[in-house]
Image 1: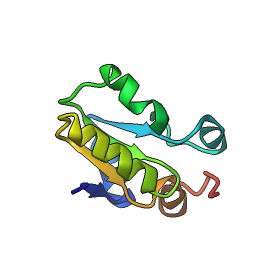
Image 2: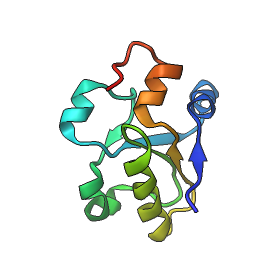
Image 3: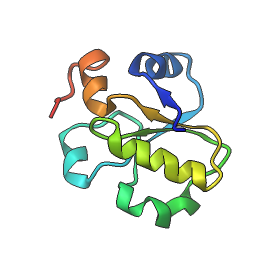
Image 4: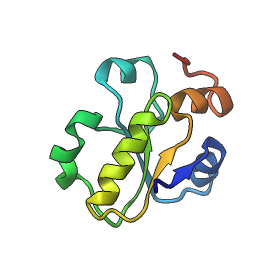
Length: 106
């Protein structure tokens, strides 16, 4: 079962300066529209080939447009032994609506 995190919970982690990394699994053209500052970009289709770039002990939040692709990415990382991974509920669109209204919802 995929663990999830709300945008409010993620904002609190940022505010508390927790050691988290956000992985944006969207395509390049989507990231050009909007992105969460500090996130790293690994499109879903490349994730399995780029696992060596990630540290299994790191806490990761997976993010896409609405939460569906990032849920799939979370499952991939969990299957590979990553323990502390969560899907951002509602994706960047929910982040834009509830946290950062300077970002474009699409």
